[in-house]
Length: 216
Image (cartoon, rainbow, N blue to C red; front, side):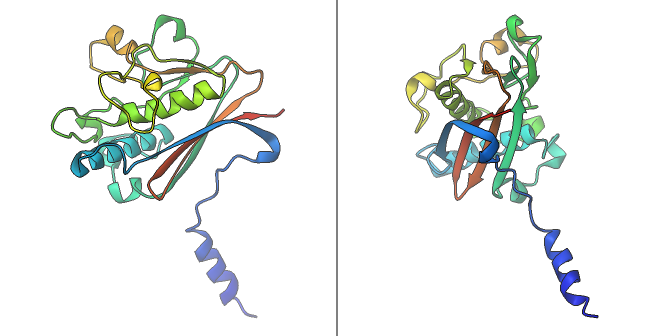
């Protein structure tokens, strides 16, 4: 009996990452936006800090990273495919310090404080620079999807490449400043009658964020 073939198939299958693409037969795409992580800043060193912080932010969001000790840049910079579902009337907030009106509806955040203690990098000015670009990408897509999206503070103090100025989102989280932090957050509430799926995909320097509505 030839058992080599089955053994090789088993070993090979352990290295295949299961696809998390949404089944188009059961969903309707509401919006999809993308940005290049090679175009975050016109200085290469600063751009790489922005890029790494964005990818680390997604890693925290997905649960791949939960603390600084988990940070492995070779793993974080690999292609990404991750999704989560938001039920009707539930809210995603970019971080845990939220406005009073959202306190009972927030069910998902990015699970991080964007600081050195979480493994985020500094460009010499701020630690965590770049996470506002991720929030802005999500805000743009959420608005185009017709979801209830609210960003209290615009990022008008600096350009975010590939994002129209009106969709720039300022994100900030300082310990002990929850009220101020809540005003520099992003809130996306599912106002549809069905669940919606948020999907992140990163490959060849392109980060795509798509939103689908489940068809029940």
